[in-house]
Structure formats: structure tokens, C-alpha cells
Image 1 (cartoon, one colour):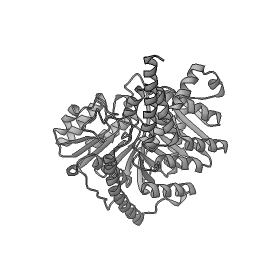
Image 2: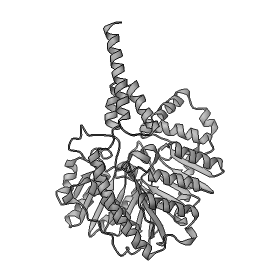
Image 3: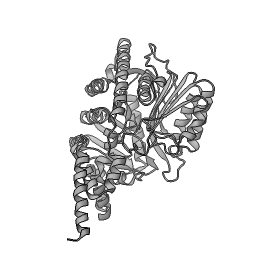
Image 4: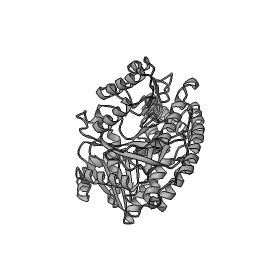
Length: 489
């Protein structure tokens, strides 16, 4: 054999050995392990570069910091729970269904998430209206503004948002901003200096002093939380940027879902932000945990409930062994007696969720899933198409939203229980990202979300057997290939 042949053999042997060692040195599920072996073996050298970017786990130091704050946060949640139990019944008897009882107990045991009653909820599906409300609340802030977003862009809306925070910081309001560096490309330290120079505090979630050697795609802070003055909180799917207010021609109309909450739940949002902030900053900049003894006074408003909505704020992330939000979704699906309606920009579920959806559909449950009809990430879009086809063949009704980009992350079960938050219906949200959702036990709110779903159906088309049969072989190949990478997308 020639020298070149020997070199190729040596490279392949070393590459394969290195791939096996690299992948097996961290504990992963079998599907993820095989996906990474596929990448590393069939993309010699290049695959290892991709692994450094997207495959490494969290460092031990970072995990310790998260664990320390988790323990402190749990104590605060327990205090909040005891206070709430002393004041209120957890759920109104009419809504305390067996499914609700099981789900609240599950989240209480796995996520230390108390059920907090006496909330008013306003739903936003339009970015302009959501940010108009948020900006009004920021304008009214007198004590503090806590902000946590995956994406804050240096664009027209982002600068408008920043200028408002600068104005409040100059007025003496405490302003703290936590953002994700990967999701907020363009929002540089220089750009943020305009806020920090007037007293605001800005941190990138788990920023590194060595961004080149420690940069990774996974383990992103995908949460979207705003808390203002122990008075109002926001949670949902909208980030901060022009595309989220439909100013980007690429996406057209941006369809999302977000909650504005007044009531006891804002304390859970405040604790969640505090945990994330303290895990990121130095000790001198930490926020003290302080569970208030009086819930905020309710305010009525257009589109709001009467102040009786019970909510659980549930977070999940790669720092915890239990995938709380995914398992919560699964419990919701398996507990359904009538309907399961889901909206998500990405549909890349694991086997557990697939089995739950298929089992529900085959049991006569009305299972509907709405996804966008346009991509924002090519591989994820093709993988979403693959699973949409698979589930459609199993009896799940798949709707492709055509009026712009569908970015909402909502689940409505039996018009009685609902979830709105940051977690998509994909493996990345289930196990690789830090996420937070509001699980809502209110028939009025759930019914409103169901009505919104039905309105969105008028802007969508149903995936039928004829459409599936018309797909080209090349399209099916791209879907099949993307599906192989689904555990690491």
C-alpha cells in the first residue's frame, strides 16, 4: 500500500478511537451518543470542531454555582409555598381535576414549584401590543426592573428598550439585565456600556473570560422573564428585537404568545430570576432572597381574568437530572380526556413524548399540533417536517401556520389546563436549554388559548396524506438525514 493509503488508515483509526473516547467520557442517553458518534466518525477532524462547539457539557465549576443557587432558591420557594398555603386553597374546587392535582403534585415534588393563586393574566399574541404594555410598566417602575431574555438585539426595538432602561436607571431605579451571549449576538459589551455607565447592571449568562476556548452552542439561557417592583411580571415566547414586532421581511408577521401577570406568581418569577442572576455574578453583586408577606394588589384590565388564576412557574435545564417541563408536557398529554392542542416553532420530540402523542391520538383524543410553514433553522425545520409527517400518519392533526412565523410555545389540554413559556417541543428545550414555563389552572385562560388556536387554524393548512405523498425524494432525504441529528440539533 502507498504512503497516502497508510496515512488515511491511520487517520481513520485515530479518528474513530478519539470519537469513541470523546463521546463515552460524558454520560448521555443512547440516541445522543449514537448521533455524536455518527458526526465524529463520518466527518473526520471537522466533526471534532463541531463537537467543541456543540457537544461539550457544562463545566463542574458552573454546575456548582447553579447547584448553590438552586439550594438557596428552593428554600425561598418552600417559604413562599408555606405562606401561600396558609393564605389560600391551592386550586378552586371546580378546577381541581385529577389531572390538575397530579400535575401540581409532580411539579411541587420535582421542581419545588408552589401553586400560587390570586393572579390576573393578560395574553399577548402580537409583539407591538406586548412591548407597548411592557414599556408602560417599565415607565411606571419605582424600585427595580429585572430582565432576563435569550435574545436582546442591537436594533431599533433593542435600542428603544435599552434607552428606556437607561432612563429608569438615571432615575435611581435598580436595573438588572441578564441575557444570553449566543442569542444576543450584536449586543456587545460596548453597546451595553450606555446602561452600565448610568448604574444599570448587565450580565451575560455564564459569560466566560475565555470566550474562544469555552464557547459552546448548548446550555443556553432560553428563559424570558421580566419582573417589576413586586407588582407585575412577564413570561412567554417573545424576545427583544425587530423581528419580534414583525419588522423583518424574512419572517413577516411574528406570531407568539406571552403573559403579563399581576399577582402572587410574580414572586416565583422573582425567585427564578434571582437564582439565575446569582449563579452568574460575583458574590458582591448577588440579590438577597426575600419572600414578601403580602401579595400585590390586583388590577383589572382589558382581557384579564378576575384575579383568581392559579399558576405554577416551572423551570428546567441541564443542571437537573429530571426534565421537569418535558415530563410535565407528557403528564398533560397522557391525562387528556378530550383534547391536546400544541403550538411550537420546532417539533423534534424524543421517544417518550412521541409515544404519549401517538397513544393519545389512537385513544380518540383530539391531538392538534401547529408549526410554522417556514424555516428559521434549516436542519431543525427539516427534522420538524419529518416528525410532523410521522405523527400525522399516526392520527395527529398537524397544521402549518402560513401567516408569518409561528413562535408560540403553548399547550392546552381539555380546555382546562394550559402552559405558556419559553420551552419548545424539541429535545433542545427538554434537556439542553435553561427554560421556564407557566402552567395555568384556569378554564377561562385555557379557553382563551383554545380560541386563539382556532383563529390561527384559519391561517394554516392541514397536513394531509396527499400532501405527504407529493413530497419529493430529495425532500424526504433531507428530512430523514435531519432526523438522525435530532438529538443534538
